[in-house]
Length: 325
Image 1: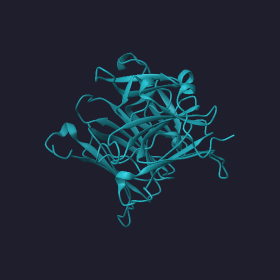
Image 2: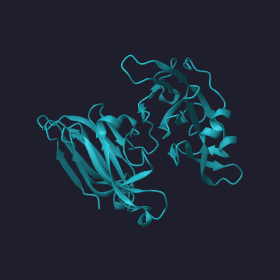
Image 3: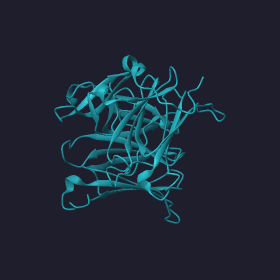
């Protein structure tokens, strides 16, 4: 199972990574609730360069630096609970100081715990199993090469989860074909900037080159972006937001940006068949997004599939500063 502590120094000797198993608050005796804290230190001074805690029920089995010391790959597994063998892979990215989730970000595959290899300065070699069915034993295993420097910006960014409901102040994500770059950040309320419950968000989409064109610029009050994902076909950006503490605490909303007409649209409950109930975004095909909703009438949670190619054009448009040309 996950180790109590793992330490790895980068090949260039300038950084030291420490993954420490931590107890879940309120239930320190229940090891099934343990998680881990990743800390990146300066070996000479001991100064913390980066620190994040992921929760719940997940520990680090293996981690390894890339030969060029730019990336740290971590293979984790759940420490108990409902899915004791559920594995997930993360990458600490030194170029932008972020932790990103590699598992399931492309080709609907999941990394197994067989080991971490590298070819070249930062191309990770990882064994995966295709998640085409619920029976893992029936899914074939094969190795994939992931050029981390080329692809890390397209991997979903993680935030600290000391509070499971914590929403990150900044999220960045490039489309997998590198045609679009999206950034969402928290913006304080102008009248009461000290009240975090009134925070809103700013969403910017632009082309990724240095003098890139700004395609969209949109500000929304009293809600923040919890998660965003590009569709595998690079034509849609899906976001989930949660309203801040102002008008409707805990209320979730889904959004879709369409590359075809460069429009931002909201996803009403009538399309989903109920109220969005979770930040999670999953794709089960090139343009089919899956979102968690509370079904109207029954009150049951359900994962609702929505083929964006067929439905996005009929979603309500949002007036934005820029829709592009």
